[in-house]
Length: 469
Image (cartoon, rainbow, N blue to C red):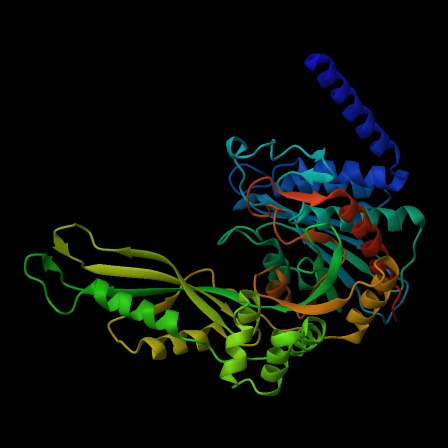
């Protein structure tokens, strides 16, 4: 009896899966195949190849009608597997500036032994796609590549030139970064009035209801600093007052107790104003008070109970690694700590270093910037030309769901594009639950429904931008 039920359940599941596949529109089915190929091309730093993934996407673009001259595949001799591509769909206007569709195709490492499913096989199960990169960021990379293919097949003649850049290195500190390489070595190739990137999205509650949409307008600069102190050391039986560990821990404690001052950009001011209106209650009042007076410590204390709000209000620095001593029976000769800072847009990493030196106030503790030193995050303008169309279109695709501009406390490749003078925005449209997505962790997933809905929205939005004057 149990066997019969198991067989019946298996057959039913298979029929259900087939039924779901048959309900896809032809364009959705084509997108799914592209997405599957991209996801199943391993692009981890250790074993994968962004170059291979780029070549496969280039082949699809050429099959859709893009000429060889419209596609640039790039890589360096030192990093042959970290390549990327730029594709160009020429516009009809001689005055309208291009737009750039940006996505990174490298992914965080994933070990098969740790995952429930093979991380490099796209698996559709229970309404979700599972795989490493299913969400971050191959969902957007597939959507942008698919959009270019659809534009070409439709014979779409945009006013603006539309450019696509698929790059490597966003997920790996110190690795070759394709966005940086393009900004420094090929700025004319990617030149654009603005770029559409990852970083925005939408939030679902635990029941799957759409709660809000967000467009990322600015982000913090990520910079690590090394705190280090040295000492002659000696035998532990003869302690001395100038102990390297004591000096370091005192310095780290001071950093931990320090609060950088509140700052606002146009984006965060708008975000907190709208959030106050939507939230109400004690938090809403505190947000309103902080907006009126950033020095209101009582209001700041209430707002900062929310860790994400606290981080959005200011530069933050936190100790993340410690290393000290060389033997259990010896006085430490060296003590080190890594402090990870998320620097408010428009503030230089040198300014933060100077503030750390001041906070610590101990010349025996050196503070140095750790490579890589990322460029300062320049906040893009909260432009009605960018935000307006996205908000208006969202009202049609996702009626009743508010859209709010946000500043990311994490990091994307946007700061590198600022080197080429390109303001960069994280696009809304793909809804995710805050918990359980597995991004950067185990069993990464994305809602199938949200992916297809987001694809339709982003395709329509890119077309709107492409036809702007």
